[in-house]
Length: 346
Image (cartoon, rainbow, N blue to C red; front, side):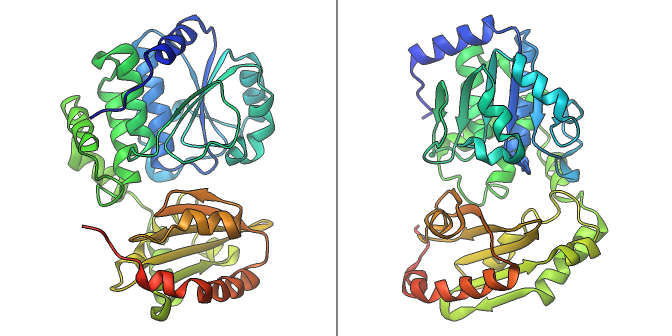
């Protein structure tokens, strides 16, 4: 069963799209595969309907996603702040994809907040935090890319998705489900994936371009993390990895290089909670994943000013790395019983 959108709302949004003179599509800071796939997929679908749009990212995209159709069209706020400010100021309509609050765009937050344009949210994270004019917020879907597919086909029909749009949306679904290994228990997710394949997606090629397209330094950093920087705490069914700025610099870190690192400890037998701590200027980025029933979004919200899904979340610690790690280990004592009871459901 697909997502049932309100006909009244869909009709109003279609009118907004067709009447808008300038449309902007944007996503969160440090965009991942779902974020990039969603904004590019929507851009291609609008273009098929004869509608031009500008695609904006707060900062750069991961190097392993630069091959995606239309990636060269993305305007980065970190590179061209004045251009982006003008585009937001002149926009009639802004699509906000794969984030539920303006703060998720980091330094672009104020620009997004001040735009006079109407804002349309398309997102699969729970509890939208900022005001939008239209909400397409659905946590049941695997990814924002899946929701974008439902959105554009509801408005413009199946012809709204060509090969380029299909590739982008498939990447979004594939990466946000770990190649269909989690967050994809709905039949409809696989139906949409099949429909995207019918549009021209070559699955093994896309898989290879995303997962076999890393730099040697990134692979060396992963090896270093697993050998030197991973601590396993079996008594709490937890493992974590931590990386300092100097360590990332040592391995020529580029945006997106640590994508997926947090998932590796979950491959260890008995581990249900995995965390990746990466040092940034002024804060420590915290990425959290779990298997089973342990709600990392609640943990992240309580301790790291973050949020996300039950099994995938993120946040920030404003302590230094040493204090962050010490306090994390202290917190685990409070959750040990819950972690030890967390189980996968068949």
